[in-house]
Image (cartoon, rainbow, N blue to C red; front, side):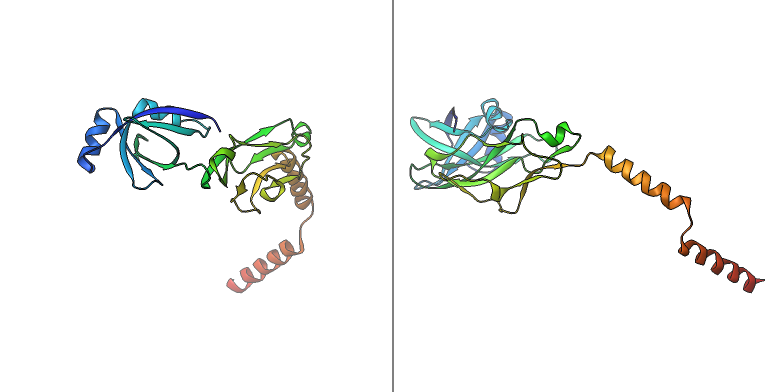
Length: 217
């Protein structure tokens, strides 16, 4: 997995008031879990944007004052209105200790089904996995070249030996469906046939209406 370097500064004062003051200065409060004790620190907001606003997943090489630590982003809190980054949780990486994370799904190739008029449906953008740090992949690549209309790729169709996939094996990753145009044409044909001859239900309905009117008179 790719790495990104970030320089951080230890936080001595904690609390909502202090966190708000940091954000006003363009700094984001963060915390690192997974070690002997939690470490509270701050990062420059512009540096964090490179890590947060991207489909990629990185191993973060943090330099907190003079201490160097490898970590992964665990959770990000955003402002509910303006989407400003409010707080970031990291988890420390230990060489042989498995960690849970998500990696992006990348589709490669041109589907036969799409070339024949089908529609590509990508149901999941990321896959949940569990792995030791050295085996963390940059992404999960799926070749869709041979997928025809009606074909699907499930999580259970993937086979990786160096990490565990924790997303449900019955989850559909990608599917090639009939195009909307083809479905509409079929529906229009059915509607035309239905309109061309009245159904027994329609006749019964008319008879019932006539009898009702006779009684009212």
